[in-house]
Image (tube, rainbow, N blue to C red; front, side, top):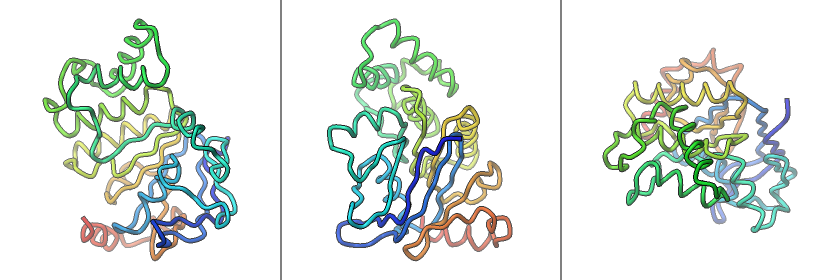
Length: 244
């Protein structure tokens, strides 16, 4: 198994505020990882460092590698190539509302160097089929439900056959059944070899689709997978619910 993410003693800041201290975080090929914790505990900030939306300080981090690249020495012009190897899924979908599903996906492929129309059309059909949305190709985003929009966002993340997917609260605005379907879809994707790292407040979903569990708490992130099964889930749920 190859290691796709390897952080050692990384310190994550928002401005001058230290959000997470001495982060040790690893992700292997095909691994399915949850990051849980209260709002403001550092989940989103950590994910942003993975796709270089938030910088890590070379003087304050021992190691930070993603997809074989050293984030501490990565130059700005190299970031687009890194992002092309990963899929990023946001809670608010971030679809372009002035164009159809097909044109949303075509826009991404064109922007990442795809030129042949036949290849573009084939790839769009493949990812829409993968997420069960092939019949929505000509719909506008505002004609889709929240769950359908999130499926399109996942299809968009799959376009360039990513080695890993980073998902920030992908079920945050969805009803329980739709949320479950979305996480099942991501779990299925991980079982085909794509690493999935997702933040969530949805504790019941972790029992439904088990994976590695990291918890952000009091400026520290820890792998709690072994302890998780023995934890009081009700207490965890209540803590997460208070933060919504």
